[in-house]
Image (cartoon, rainbow, N blue to C red; front, side, top):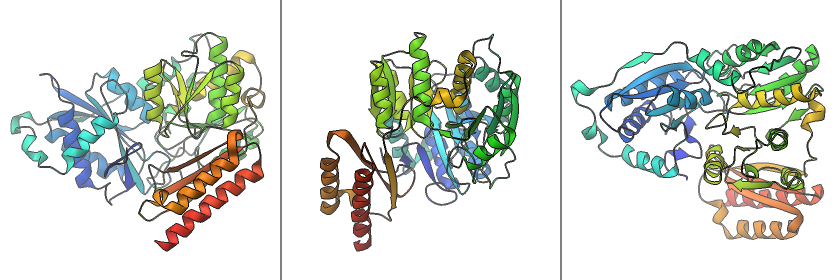
Length: 450
Protein backbone atom coordinates (compact mmCIF):
# COMPACT_ATOMS: atom_id res chain seq x y z
CA UNK A 1 0.00 0.00 0.00
CA UNK A 2 1.22 3.51 -0.76
CA UNK A 3 -1.05 5.94 1.08
CA UNK A 4 -0.56 9.58 1.94
CA UNK A 5 1.05 8.65 5.24
CA UNK A 6 1.84 4.92 5.42
CA UNK A 7 4.43 3.28 3.18
CA UNK A 8 5.81 -0.25 3.08
CA UNK A 9 7.04 -0.05 6.68
CA UNK A 10 4.85 2.34 8.63
CA UNK A 11 5.20 6.10 8.29
CA UNK A 12 8.62 7.47 7.40
CA UNK A 13 10.12 10.75 6.25
CA UNK A 14 12.34 13.69 7.05
CA UNK A 15 11.98 14.68 10.68
CA UNK A 16 9.92 17.84 11.23
CA UNK A 17 8.70 17.76 7.62
CA UNK A 18 5.47 16.20 6.34
CA UNK A 19 4.55 13.51 7.28
CA UNK A 20 7.01 13.23 10.19
CA UNK A 21 5.84 16.29 12.13
CA UNK A 22 4.90 16.47 15.79
CA UNK A 23 1.30 17.30 14.85
CA UNK A 24 0.89 14.22 12.65
CA UNK A 25 2.65 12.01 15.21
CA UNK A 26 0.16 13.19 17.83
CA UNK A 27 -2.77 12.48 15.50
CA UNK A 28 -1.37 9.03 14.70
CA UNK A 29 -1.27 8.42 18.45
CA UNK A 30 -4.90 9.49 18.74
CA UNK A 31 -6.04 7.38 15.78
CA UNK A 32 -4.05 4.28 16.75
CA UNK A 33 -5.17 4.59 20.36
CA UNK A 34 -8.84 4.79 19.37
CA UNK A 35 -8.47 1.90 16.89
CA UNK A 36 -7.22 -0.56 19.50
CA UNK A 37 -9.57 0.03 22.40
CA UNK A 38 -11.47 -3.15 23.17
CA UNK A 39 -13.22 -4.12 26.39
CA UNK A 40 -13.41 -2.25 29.68
CA UNK A 41 -9.83 -2.68 30.95
CA UNK A 42 -7.23 0.07 31.15
CA UNK A 43 -5.70 0.15 27.69
CA UNK A 44 -1.94 0.24 27.41
CA UNK A 45 0.71 0.94 24.80
CA UNK A 46 4.40 0.06 24.77
CA UNK A 47 6.47 2.73 23.04
CA UNK A 48 10.11 2.32 22.05
CA UNK A 49 12.48 4.35 19.92
CA UNK A 50 15.97 4.32 18.45
CA UNK A 51 18.66 6.93 19.12
CA UNK A 52 17.80 9.74 16.68
CA UNK A 53 17.64 13.29 17.94
CA UNK A 54 14.10 13.64 16.58
CA UNK A 55 12.99 10.68 18.67
CA UNK A 56 12.38 13.01 21.63
CA UNK A 57 9.98 15.14 19.59
CA UNK A 58 8.08 12.25 18.03
CA UNK A 59 7.94 10.30 21.31
CA UNK A 60 6.38 13.18 23.25
CA UNK A 61 3.91 13.91 20.46
CA UNK A 62 2.87 10.25 20.30
CA UNK A 63 2.46 10.14 24.08
CA UNK A 64 0.19 13.19 23.95
CA UNK A 65 -1.99 11.61 21.27
CA UNK A 66 -2.17 8.21 22.92
CA UNK A 67 -3.00 9.65 26.34
CA UNK A 68 -5.67 11.84 24.73
CA UNK A 69 -7.22 8.67 23.35
CA UNK A 70 -7.30 7.19 26.85
CA UNK A 71 -4.28 4.88 26.54
CA UNK A 72 -1.70 4.35 29.28
CA UNK A 73 1.79 4.53 27.74
CA UNK A 74 4.77 2.45 28.87
CA UNK A 75 7.91 4.24 27.71
CA UNK A 76 10.71 1.81 26.88
CA UNK A 77 13.39 4.27 25.72
CA UNK A 78 15.97 3.22 23.10
CA UNK A 79 15.34 -0.46 22.36
CA UNK A 80 15.30 -2.70 19.23
CA UNK A 81 12.16 -2.96 17.13
CA UNK A 82 11.85 -6.74 17.80
CA UNK A 83 11.93 -6.00 21.53
CA UNK A 84 8.85 -3.79 21.12
CA UNK A 85 7.13 -6.62 19.23
CA UNK A 86 8.03 -9.02 22.06
CA UNK A 87 7.06 -6.66 24.88
CA UNK A 88 3.65 -5.78 23.44
CA UNK A 89 2.76 -9.43 24.03
CA UNK A 90 4.72 -9.91 27.25
CA UNK A 91 3.16 -6.84 28.89
CA UNK A 92 -0.29 -7.62 27.44
CA UNK A 93 -0.47 -4.26 25.74
CA UNK A 94 -3.10 -3.32 23.18
CA UNK A 95 -0.65 -1.78 20.76
CA UNK A 96 3.11 -1.36 20.26
CA UNK A 97 4.84 1.67 18.76
CA UNK A 98 8.43 1.90 17.51
CA UNK A 99 9.80 5.30 16.57
CA UNK A 100 12.54 4.62 14.04
CA UNK A 101 13.54 5.08 10.43
CA UNK A 102 15.48 1.81 10.56
CA UNK A 103 18.61 2.05 8.37
CA UNK A 104 17.97 5.64 7.19
CA UNK A 105 20.19 8.57 8.25
CA UNK A 106 19.55 10.47 11.51
CA UNK A 107 17.54 13.24 9.82
CA UNK A 108 14.76 10.79 8.92
CA UNK A 109 12.38 9.17 11.35
CA UNK A 110 9.39 6.88 11.26
CA UNK A 111 6.54 5.27 13.17
CA UNK A 112 5.98 1.51 13.14
CA UNK A 113 2.85 0.07 14.74
CA UNK A 114 2.28 -3.42 16.15
CA UNK A 115 -1.00 -5.02 17.13
CA UNK A 116 -1.58 -6.81 20.45
CA UNK A 117 -0.33 -10.05 18.87
CA UNK A 118 3.08 -8.47 18.17
CA UNK A 119 2.64 -8.40 14.40
CA UNK A 120 2.86 -5.31 12.20
CA UNK A 121 -0.50 -3.96 11.14
CA UNK A 122 -2.20 -5.13 7.99
CA UNK A 123 -2.87 -2.79 5.07
CA UNK A 124 -6.54 -2.70 6.06
CA UNK A 125 -5.86 -1.49 9.61
CA UNK A 126 -3.31 1.05 8.38
CA UNK A 127 -5.90 2.34 5.88
CA UNK A 128 -8.42 2.70 8.69
CA UNK A 129 -5.97 4.66 10.85
CA UNK A 130 -4.93 6.79 7.88
CA UNK A 131 -8.57 7.55 7.15
CA UNK A 132 -8.96 9.02 10.64
CA UNK A 133 -5.99 11.39 10.46
CA UNK A 134 -7.64 14.15 8.44
CA UNK A 135 -11.01 13.98 10.18
CA UNK A 136 -12.30 15.64 13.36
CA UNK A 137 -10.76 12.92 15.48
CA UNK A 138 -10.90 15.14 18.58
CA UNK A 139 -14.66 14.43 18.86
CA UNK A 140 -13.95 10.79 19.74
CA UNK A 141 -11.20 11.35 22.32
CA UNK A 142 -11.39 10.44 26.00
CA UNK A 143 -13.23 12.51 28.57
CA UNK A 144 -11.19 14.46 31.10
CA UNK A 145 -11.43 11.65 33.65
CA UNK A 146 -10.50 9.00 31.08
CA UNK A 147 -7.13 10.34 29.95
CA UNK A 148 -4.14 8.02 29.88
CA UNK A 149 -0.96 8.11 31.93
CA UNK A 150 2.65 7.71 30.83
CA UNK A 151 5.54 6.16 32.75
CA UNK A 152 9.02 4.84 32.13
CA UNK A 153 9.39 1.07 32.46
CA UNK A 154 12.54 -0.34 34.05
CA UNK A 155 14.17 -3.65 33.21
CA UNK A 156 13.04 -3.91 29.59
CA UNK A 157 16.62 -4.38 28.35
CA UNK A 158 17.07 -7.34 30.68
CA UNK A 159 13.80 -8.88 29.51
CA UNK A 160 14.85 -8.68 25.87
CA UNK A 161 18.35 -10.02 26.59
CA UNK A 162 16.87 -13.04 28.36
CA UNK A 163 14.40 -13.56 25.51
CA UNK A 164 17.24 -13.54 22.95
CA UNK A 165 19.39 -15.92 25.01
CA UNK A 166 16.49 -18.39 25.33
CA UNK A 167 16.40 -18.82 21.54
CA UNK A 168 19.51 -20.98 21.94
CA UNK A 169 19.61 -24.35 23.72
CA UNK A 170 20.22 -23.89 27.44
CA UNK A 171 23.42 -25.94 27.23
CA UNK A 172 24.95 -23.90 24.40
CA UNK A 173 27.75 -21.47 25.20
CA UNK A 174 29.52 -19.07 22.85
CA UNK A 175 32.78 -19.39 24.78
CA UNK A 176 35.82 -19.53 22.53
CA UNK A 177 34.30 -17.19 19.94
CA UNK A 178 35.66 -13.70 19.43
CA UNK A 179 32.83 -11.56 18.07
CA UNK A 180 32.83 -8.00 16.79
CA UNK A 181 29.36 -6.47 16.93
CA UNK A 182 28.55 -3.19 15.16
CA UNK A 183 25.46 -1.65 16.74
CA UNK A 184 25.22 1.26 14.26
CA UNK A 185 25.02 3.73 17.16
CA UNK A 186 21.42 2.61 17.29
CA UNK A 187 18.80 0.94 19.42
CA UNK A 188 20.78 -2.21 20.24
CA UNK A 189 23.89 -0.45 21.52
CA UNK A 190 23.35 -1.84 25.03
CA UNK A 191 21.46 -5.10 24.57
CA UNK A 192 23.41 -6.78 21.75
CA UNK A 193 26.89 -6.68 23.33
CA UNK A 194 25.41 -7.67 26.70
CA UNK A 195 23.55 -10.69 25.31
CA UNK A 196 26.62 -11.98 23.47
CA UNK A 197 28.82 -11.50 26.54
CA UNK A 198 26.33 -13.26 28.83
CA UNK A 199 26.37 -16.22 26.43
CA UNK A 200 30.12 -16.53 26.97
CA UNK A 201 31.61 -14.85 23.91
CA UNK A 202 34.54 -12.47 23.85
CA UNK A 203 32.86 -9.32 22.58
CA UNK A 204 34.35 -6.30 20.84
CA UNK A 205 31.56 -3.74 20.46
CA UNK A 206 31.86 -0.86 18.00
CA UNK A 207 29.57 2.08 17.21
CA UNK A 208 27.95 1.98 20.64
CA UNK A 209 28.16 5.71 21.44
CA UNK A 210 24.99 7.28 20.00
CA UNK A 211 24.76 11.07 20.06
CA UNK A 212 21.52 11.63 18.16
CA UNK A 213 23.28 12.28 14.86
CA UNK A 214 25.55 9.27 14.22
CA UNK A 215 22.96 6.48 13.90
CA UNK A 216 23.80 4.43 10.76
CA UNK A 217 26.49 6.97 9.84
CA UNK A 218 29.14 4.99 7.94
CA UNK A 219 28.41 2.00 10.16
CA UNK A 220 25.96 -0.82 10.70
CA UNK A 221 24.46 -3.25 8.22
CA UNK A 222 24.33 -0.74 5.35
CA UNK A 223 27.97 0.38 5.81
CA UNK A 224 29.92 -2.69 6.98
CA UNK A 225 33.41 -1.54 5.88
CA UNK A 226 34.34 -0.50 9.40
CA UNK A 227 33.25 -3.87 10.76
CA UNK A 228 35.26 -5.69 8.10
CA UNK A 229 38.34 -3.72 9.10
CA UNK A 230 37.81 -4.42 12.80
CA UNK A 231 37.34 -8.16 12.23
CA UNK A 232 40.73 -8.22 10.49
CA UNK A 233 42.33 -6.04 13.14
CA UNK A 234 41.33 -8.19 16.15
CA UNK A 235 41.32 -11.51 14.25
CA UNK A 236 37.72 -12.14 15.18
CA UNK A 237 35.81 -15.30 14.31
CA UNK A 238 32.80 -13.34 13.09
CA UNK A 239 31.43 -9.83 12.71
CA UNK A 240 27.78 -8.92 13.29
CA UNK A 241 26.37 -5.67 11.85
CA UNK A 242 22.95 -4.47 12.96
CA UNK A 243 21.03 -1.49 11.64
CA UNK A 244 19.64 1.45 13.58
CA UNK A 245 16.65 -0.38 15.04
CA UNK A 246 18.30 -3.84 15.02
CA UNK A 247 15.67 -5.63 12.95
CA UNK A 248 18.20 -6.55 10.27
CA UNK A 249 21.65 -8.10 10.29
CA UNK A 250 24.62 -8.61 8.00
CA UNK A 251 27.40 -11.04 8.89
CA UNK A 252 31.12 -10.65 8.17
CA UNK A 253 33.20 -13.85 8.12
CA UNK A 254 36.67 -14.25 9.63
CA UNK A 255 38.25 -13.14 6.34
CA UNK A 256 36.20 -9.95 6.20
CA UNK A 257 33.79 -11.14 3.48
CA UNK A 258 30.16 -10.02 3.74
CA UNK A 259 27.39 -12.58 4.20
CA UNK A 260 24.03 -11.10 3.18
CA UNK A 261 20.50 -12.04 4.15
CA UNK A 262 20.10 -14.58 1.34
CA UNK A 263 23.10 -16.59 2.54
CA UNK A 264 21.95 -16.31 6.16
CA UNK A 265 18.52 -17.67 5.20
CA UNK A 266 20.17 -20.48 3.25
CA UNK A 267 22.34 -21.43 6.24
CA UNK A 268 19.47 -21.39 8.75
CA UNK A 269 17.06 -23.16 6.39
CA UNK A 270 19.55 -25.96 5.70
CA UNK A 271 20.32 -26.39 9.40
CA UNK A 272 16.65 -26.44 10.41
CA UNK A 273 15.75 -28.73 7.51
CA UNK A 274 18.39 -31.25 8.57
CA UNK A 275 17.18 -31.18 12.18
CA UNK A 276 13.52 -31.49 11.18
CA UNK A 277 12.65 -28.03 12.47
CA UNK A 278 11.93 -26.30 9.16
CA UNK A 279 8.18 -25.92 8.67
CA UNK A 280 6.18 -25.65 5.47
CA UNK A 281 8.74 -27.16 3.11
CA UNK A 282 10.39 -23.89 2.17
CA UNK A 283 11.42 -20.33 2.88
CA UNK A 284 9.66 -17.01 2.28
CA UNK A 285 11.56 -14.09 0.79
CA UNK A 286 10.90 -11.17 -1.52
CA UNK A 287 11.26 -10.55 -5.23
CA UNK A 288 14.72 -9.10 -4.51
CA UNK A 289 16.31 -12.34 -3.26
CA UNK A 290 18.94 -13.89 -5.49
CA UNK A 291 18.05 -16.62 -7.96
CA UNK A 292 20.93 -18.60 -6.47
CA UNK A 293 18.98 -18.97 -3.21
CA UNK A 294 15.99 -20.32 -5.09
CA UNK A 295 18.17 -22.88 -6.88
CA UNK A 296 19.93 -23.89 -3.62
CA UNK A 297 16.62 -24.53 -1.89
CA UNK A 298 15.35 -26.38 -4.94
CA UNK A 299 18.27 -28.80 -4.72
CA UNK A 300 16.97 -29.73 -1.24
CA UNK A 301 13.44 -30.08 -2.62
CA UNK A 302 12.45 -26.90 -0.78
CA UNK A 303 10.48 -24.02 -2.27
CA UNK A 304 11.27 -20.30 -2.23
CA UNK A 305 8.05 -18.30 -1.84
CA UNK A 306 8.43 -14.71 -3.08
CA UNK A 307 6.46 -11.70 -1.86
CA UNK A 308 6.45 -7.95 -2.32
CA UNK A 309 9.34 -6.08 -0.71
CA UNK A 310 8.76 -5.45 3.00
CA UNK A 311 9.27 -7.81 5.90
CA UNK A 312 5.62 -7.57 6.95
CA UNK A 313 4.58 -9.09 3.60
CA UNK A 314 7.06 -11.88 4.25
CA UNK A 315 5.52 -12.43 7.70
CA UNK A 316 1.97 -12.39 6.33
CA UNK A 317 2.88 -15.12 3.83
CA UNK A 318 4.66 -17.15 6.50
CA UNK A 319 1.59 -17.03 8.73
CA UNK A 320 -0.81 -17.87 5.91
CA UNK A 321 1.17 -20.88 4.70
CA UNK A 322 2.75 -22.28 7.86
CA UNK A 323 6.43 -21.47 7.21
CA UNK A 324 8.85 -20.51 9.97
CA UNK A 325 11.88 -19.07 8.10
CA UNK A 326 11.69 -15.96 5.96
CA UNK A 327 13.40 -12.70 5.28
CA UNK A 328 14.98 -10.29 2.87
CA UNK A 329 18.33 -10.06 1.13
CA UNK A 330 18.97 -6.84 3.05
CA UNK A 331 19.15 -8.80 6.31
CA UNK A 332 15.62 -8.76 7.71
CA UNK A 333 15.42 -12.37 8.90
CA UNK A 334 12.16 -13.57 10.43
CA UNK A 335 12.22 -16.74 12.50
CA UNK A 336 8.61 -17.16 13.59
CA UNK A 337 9.44 -19.84 16.16
CA UNK A 338 10.88 -16.95 18.18
CA UNK A 339 9.66 -13.61 16.89
CA UNK A 340 6.86 -11.89 15.01
CA UNK A 341 9.16 -9.57 13.06
CA UNK A 342 12.75 -9.32 11.83
CA UNK A 343 15.29 -9.67 14.65
CA UNK A 344 18.95 -9.06 13.84
CA UNK A 345 20.34 -10.34 17.14
CA UNK A 346 18.26 -13.53 17.23
CA UNK A 347 19.17 -14.28 13.59
CA UNK A 348 22.86 -13.79 14.38
CA UNK A 349 22.52 -16.18 17.33
CA UNK A 350 21.21 -18.87 14.97
CA UNK A 351 24.29 -18.40 12.78
CA UNK A 352 26.50 -18.65 15.88
CA UNK A 353 24.67 -21.84 16.89
CA UNK A 354 25.58 -23.39 13.51
CA UNK A 355 29.22 -22.43 14.07
CA UNK A 356 29.28 -24.05 17.50
CA UNK A 357 27.50 -27.22 16.40
CA UNK A 358 29.65 -27.81 13.33
CA UNK A 359 32.89 -26.31 14.68
CA UNK A 360 33.67 -24.79 11.29
CA UNK A 361 34.61 -21.20 10.36
CA UNK A 362 31.99 -18.79 9.06
CA UNK A 363 33.61 -18.67 5.62
CA UNK A 364 32.96 -22.39 5.13
CA UNK A 365 29.48 -22.41 6.60
CA UNK A 366 28.03 -19.30 5.01
CA UNK A 367 28.83 -19.78 1.32
CA UNK A 368 25.83 -21.97 0.60
CA UNK A 369 25.40 -20.97 -3.03
CA UNK A 370 27.11 -18.97 -5.74
CA UNK A 371 24.97 -15.86 -6.26
CA UNK A 372 23.66 -15.30 -9.75
CA UNK A 373 25.06 -12.00 -11.10
CA UNK A 374 22.69 -9.31 -9.87
CA UNK A 375 22.69 -5.56 -10.40
CA UNK A 376 20.56 -2.97 -8.62
CA UNK A 377 20.46 0.72 -9.55
CA UNK A 378 18.29 3.47 -8.13
CA UNK A 379 16.81 6.38 -10.06
CA UNK A 380 15.73 9.37 -7.98
CA UNK A 381 12.37 10.82 -8.94
CA UNK A 382 10.64 14.06 -8.00
CA UNK A 383 7.04 13.02 -8.60
CA UNK A 384 4.71 11.64 -11.20
CA UNK A 385 4.32 7.99 -12.20
CA UNK A 386 7.27 7.20 -14.49
CA UNK A 387 6.53 3.46 -14.49
CA UNK A 388 3.27 4.18 -16.32
CA UNK A 389 5.00 6.04 -19.17
CA UNK A 390 4.87 4.17 -22.51
CA UNK A 391 8.67 4.34 -23.23
CA UNK A 392 9.43 2.94 -19.76
CA UNK A 393 6.89 0.13 -20.14
CA UNK A 394 8.38 -0.77 -23.53
CA UNK A 395 11.95 -0.81 -22.12
CA UNK A 396 10.89 -3.07 -19.25
CA UNK A 397 9.13 -5.50 -21.60
CA UNK A 398 12.18 -5.61 -23.87
CA UNK A 399 14.44 -6.23 -20.86
CA UNK A 400 12.34 -9.17 -19.72
CA UNK A 401 12.43 -10.68 -23.20
CA UNK A 402 16.23 -10.32 -23.39
CA UNK A 403 16.74 -12.05 -20.03
CA UNK A 404 14.32 -14.85 -20.91
CA UNK A 405 14.02 -17.81 -18.57
CA UNK A 406 17.61 -17.59 -17.31
CA UNK A 407 17.12 -14.33 -15.43
CA UNK A 408 14.74 -12.01 -13.62
CA UNK A 409 13.86 -8.34 -13.80
CA UNK A 410 12.30 -6.43 -10.88
CA UNK A 411 11.30 -2.77 -11.21
CA UNK A 412 9.62 -1.13 -8.24
CA UNK A 413 9.22 2.21 -6.47
CA UNK A 414 10.88 2.39 -3.06
CA UNK A 415 8.43 2.40 -0.19
CA UNK A 416 10.65 4.61 1.96
CA UNK A 417 12.47 6.97 -0.43
CA UNK A 418 11.66 8.86 -3.69
CA UNK A 419 13.42 6.24 -5.83
CA UNK A 420 12.69 3.74 -8.57
CA UNK A 421 14.70 0.58 -7.98
CA UNK A 422 15.82 -1.33 -11.09
CA UNK A 423 17.15 -4.82 -10.43
CA UNK A 424 18.09 -7.56 -12.89
CA UNK A 425 19.87 -10.86 -12.46
CA UNK A 426 20.91 -13.67 -14.76
CA UNK A 427 23.73 -16.01 -15.66
CA UNK A 428 25.21 -13.51 -18.15
CA UNK A 429 26.53 -10.48 -16.17
CA UNK A 430 27.09 -8.37 -19.30
CA UNK A 431 23.49 -8.87 -20.38
CA UNK A 432 22.27 -8.04 -16.86
CA UNK A 433 24.24 -4.79 -16.85
CA UNK A 434 23.01 -3.83 -20.32
CA UNK A 435 19.37 -4.44 -19.41
CA UNK A 436 19.61 -2.40 -16.19
CA UNK A 437 21.46 0.48 -17.86
CA UNK A 438 18.96 0.66 -20.70
CA UNK A 439 15.98 0.90 -18.33
CA UNK A 440 17.76 3.39 -16.04
CA UNK A 441 18.54 5.54 -19.09
CA UNK A 442 14.91 5.59 -20.18
CA UNK A 443 13.78 6.46 -16.64
CA UNK A 444 16.28 9.33 -16.48
CA UNK A 445 15.14 10.61 -19.88
CA UNK A 446 11.52 10.48 -18.71
CA UNK A 447 12.44 12.33 -15.53
CA UNK A 448 14.27 15.05 -17.49
CA UNK A 449 11.33 15.52 -19.84
CA UNK A 450 8.84 15.85 -17.00
